[in-house]
Length: 152
Length: 152
DNA sequence: GCTAAATGTAACCAAGTCAGTTACCTACTC
DNA sequence: GAGTAGGTAACTGACTTGGTTACATTTAGC
Image (cartoon, rainbow over all chains, first blue to last red; front, side, top):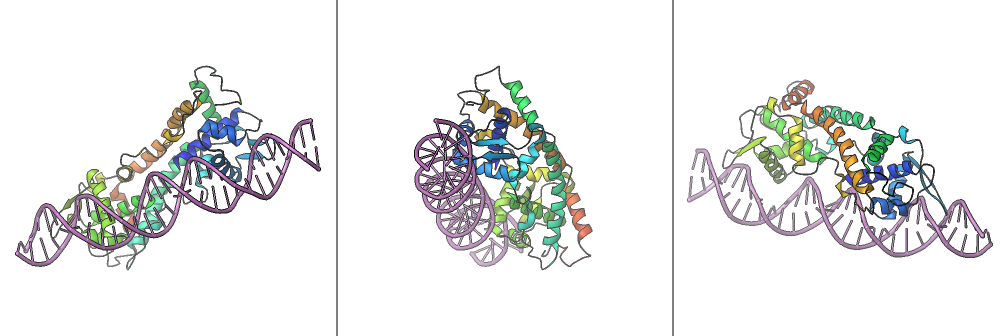
């Protein structure tokens, strides 16, 4: 899911940059180096997470659903994880359990690992899409000609 | 890799409990609800990470390589991840790059996500195997008959 | 209205990962 | 020497995921 997250952030940063102008999946795919359908699939997830909205028809495309400052990397992370058990799913350790160790181990790990995950979440929550853009801007040499809504 | 981590921790906790007594892969597998070969494979990873050592031959098995207090969940996590790129591998976003955005995006994400990962690592590093055992002990009703080195 | 340009999806394929399993060699204890 | 263990290779089946094609649907603009 590494790539999903990276591509999603890439896309969102692009959308943030193209404020208000819908961007087509084709353009986004070319920028992210993937296939338009992959972008649209991803977009479906981002849309149900409420991070983007899309416009059908000619001249359509995707737009941010809210200002970049209101979208955190945690939002993106969560959207990619969707309903999946957060990061550490201990549930699969078979509760073999002619005694309780299996089950108890499960709960113990869930607690201990849950706090680790929470720490990561907090760190992710602290970074907004706007900050990502600022970081990007600081790194881009000058204007390389791709800062518009054109290619990237 | 959820299950790998969970099983590894399960195994290590078991070994910590059986202080000094080698435990066979068969017993460990039965406790963790998996196959002995899976345990041995995992054990290979833990061994190269320096967390356990194994004894060949009759009466052999696995033992902790150091005291439980000296093994953190981060050690386990790292062992499971091995040489793999830590958690967020942004490298796969194609640097399509008729301009620099792709590459720059990569670096930016690596930095931002790296700090999130570091936060998680710190939280994991704060938990030792000994604490896991204490947590387990506190949860186990009384002595359910499986606290020895026998079954679990 | 018609056309062109988009999205939304479904379906399929190839690649990769991983747990489970079998099999066999090797090492060690008794 | 026999039995008991780990080490490892090899194969399988399930699952995930990215890429691709194909097609229905929607919308803007003429």
